[in-house]
Image (cartoon, rainbow, N blue to C red; front, side, top):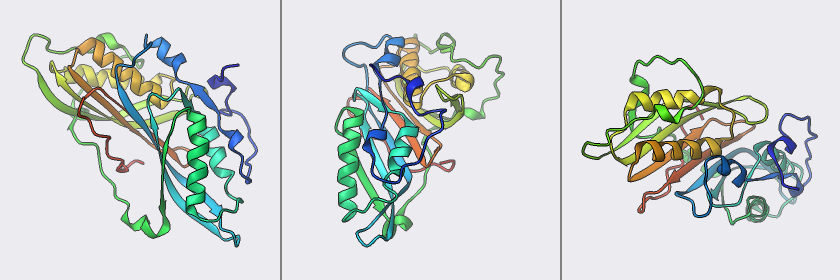
Amino acid sequence: MTNTADLSPLGKSAAYRSDYAPELLFPIPRQGKRDELALHGTLPFFGLDIWNAYELSWLNLRGKPQVAIARVTVPADSPNIVESKSFKLYLNSFNQTRLADPEALRALLTQDLSQGFGAPVQVALTLQEAFSEQKMGELEGLLLDRLDVEITHYTPSPLMLTAALDEAPVEEKLVSHLLKSNCLVTGQPDWGSVQIHYAGPQINQESLLKYLIGFREHNEFHEQCVERIFMDILRQCAPQRLAVYARYTRRGGLDINPWRSNFSTATPPSNLRCARQ
């Protein structure tokens, strides 16, 4: 049976295991939501989902608690996402688990998460001694939120997106901190900032801001929202190159930051934590 969001631990009471339990991870195939976007075969983008885990603890062999921050980098072409509550429950299963050293933890995380996502993932740990080196930053680009727009509905409508198709192409980065969507299962709010980097016909900024605000009552997981934004802009505004990067605020000690791009020379985005994260 295929895992679906409604079968996940979301919205249900769950016991918090404190002994290592990789079976808690709940994969959900990406293709179901991609079917809604008519995405079949070769994807029109590549990208990553960057997860940051701030509530990660385990015991050393003498029983002393250890803490770290984990960064998990997942390729966008992995067959699955992992439902975030199950991810949290899995991480909590290390709380009373004794491990020889941080590398033993990293190896288990890499093994289990690669199996859950269905593709190799990269795991990096930031240990206590490096906490002071952690930096913050904001997405680069022209702020769309400066525009005084009137909003009349709060569902994403790609037809409102417009671009100057008959004029000379431009390249620019546009940013909004007004992205809000809702959990696909529970309806709880998901808050984010988003950067649109494109080269092609100039996108009408007012239409883009209205479109992004339109996600305010939309129910979808983070990764799915970013792919929807990417495809709607690609189809309606016809950019030659496009990248969409969203930084979502954390829930349960986890933040998820999806990036989708078709820039041939694109480098992975910065993982600088934004002010609201």
